[in-house]
Length: 364
Image (cartoon, rainbow, N blue to C red; front, side, top):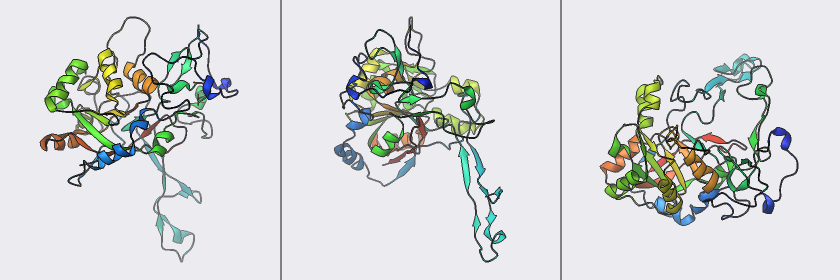
């Protein structure tokens, strides 16, 4: 039996001290405060920012975002589509190459202004903690309910409509906001700032583009071979080569290429998850679709379909970055015997959003 939470559940907000009575095993709920919404971003201290700045030696910058119209089509995720760009309207005319002299003969300006219809997690992106929760009995009443990081509740803090007409791109109704995150939205990450020391783990250099779920033992061998050390507050990036393959497919991907190539982490590997906990890493991002292998390795019994998302977003408050373009940076770092750099990677400051496009910049 589970408790049903929909948009009608909005009553009074639970007090912070009673939002949860028990936390998930292996979680850090409450460790950064009862109302924390930043999670392990709290570990990116001024000292960690200075450590990132200390890695800037050449003054070279790398854009870690794909063009936001990649991967192209919707084969990677049928619910997400490429962005649509259209002009705004000015005096009942498209506001693109609009000649102001048409309204006032004394004005010589030509104006263009546009809008975008965008699926926020179509391309290079951040996941907020409101992106993935779990059914969990946080209040101890014996009934699992939708809960997110630090006990924030689905149906109140993270809300949405029940009518499918109020979801997706508006077609029959006037556009209006119908969902959002009153807590844990991506704007918290943006307002904190995302800048510090990045650490590259180059899986592609060891495994190429073979389709492989990388577990703890394999990851440790890569770290040892490359001399990579991850310290508390570091922002860890995983290079698999997947995003580079999207670039090479130029917006015309195939199902085989999307779902049968490159490495991802094995989210079922408990030692790997424990390493994420113990390492103190502040964020985890990759150039593949979900950081972890999807679908996850088979498991018997009731469990999370996305175990690494559960561990990071739900239990530990670790933001996940996905579909970053890491190959040029990874190749440069390997050629120069380095793996650390300054990473600057804020999301959009879009209140209530559960994810965001990103244009991360690495400086070496």
